[in-house]
Image (cartoon, rainbow, N blue to C red; front, side, top):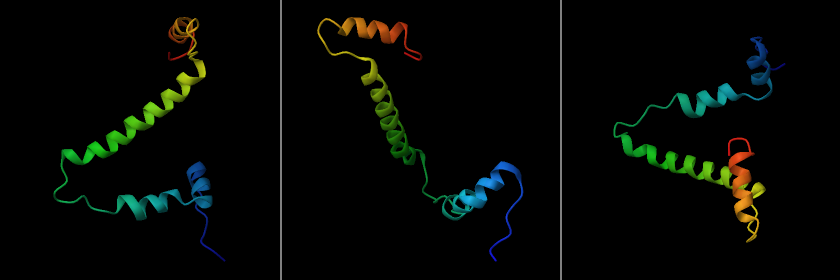
Length: 86
């Protein structure tokens, strides 16, 4: 048949159905870092991380903010006082 299933708990069960560790080893962990790797290589991934954080927080803010002239201050006050992590 096919390969023998690995029996090491939950990770083995997930890995039998979706080979995450095999994919990690083939595409990410077996590569060596280039010799000219320096601090500036991090800025691309940091910019992507900041963009994702801003998109996620913007989505949550649009759920609670009311852009009406009368309700704007009340909605900001509600976000600051009553919304979790607000």
